[in-house]
Image 1 (tube, helix red, strand yellow):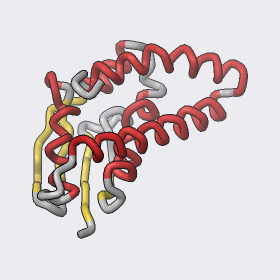
Image 2 (tube, one colour):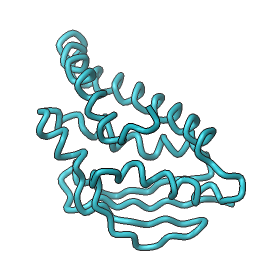
Image 3 (cartoon, rainbow, N blue to C red):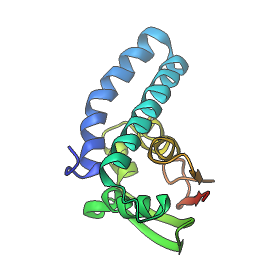
Amino acid sequence: MDNIPIIVKRRLQAEVMGPVFDEMSAQLGQQKAEDILRVAIQNAAIAEGQHLAATHSSPDQSPLRNFIDLFEQWKAGGALEVDVLHESDDQFDFNVTRCRYAEMYQDMDLGHIGHLLSCHRDGTFCQGFDDRITLQRDQTIMGGASCCTFRYRCET
């Protein structure tokens, strides 16, 4: 599954998780269903980060440089339009100006949980990939902002 574009993976996951979420909401209530989905997706993101770190990291590069190289997979097929503000071995700042993930979830009538299915993965993915990488993001397109602000830092 490593060679499938991330946006295709997220669509396939959403096709399964949407009905599961609806059933959890009906039986447990919306908040409990969101809590369960949030934890499950975060755990999956950490596991995915660990897998990709093991299979796509070079010991000759900084952890953040390995992450930056991998980031191309999230942009594949025009899934994200990005303005890079700063890129180095310990800092990676960019804004997403168009997010086709958000558009996809809206088209699937899953906009109400799109942040759980994708946005909340980003910071926890770092925990699995390399816990020295942290993300600060103050706004997202999925949350109604005009852009997503990604500010990655790596302690060396």
